[in-house]
Length: 162
Image: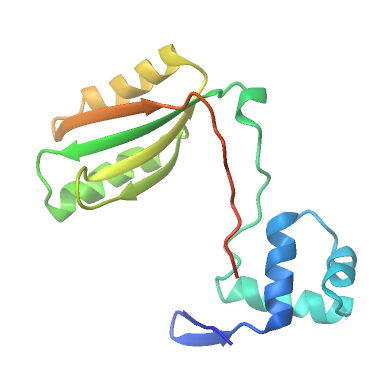
């Protein structure tokens, strides 16, 4: 049984927890009764488990995953950012800047190499150019920006093996 530390508490995931997590990762829109039937548990038990997993922070949130090209955001850019000054407060400032930008879907502080890697979803190249100017060109602490544009997405998965 795997033990996950959540805040100061520890929660142990059993087989039912794993079945629930896998089923929710496949389709979180199911009703509690549908979920209970799939994982072979009673609806009250299933509801309690989901509540416990959510309160423990294992289920962070439930969302709908959209097809970017169908909502006007067909261009994916992977962007490497290197800051000029790597002081902790500069990292925090940059993270706050990109956190406020809806087109930035993911931001990772990485090592070695660049300081950050961003996943950006925009409509097209002019939209990317506007975003790059707004976020990168006008910031004094950005030393280098290197962008890669997706030609084809061969895999996109949100599931985590549990």
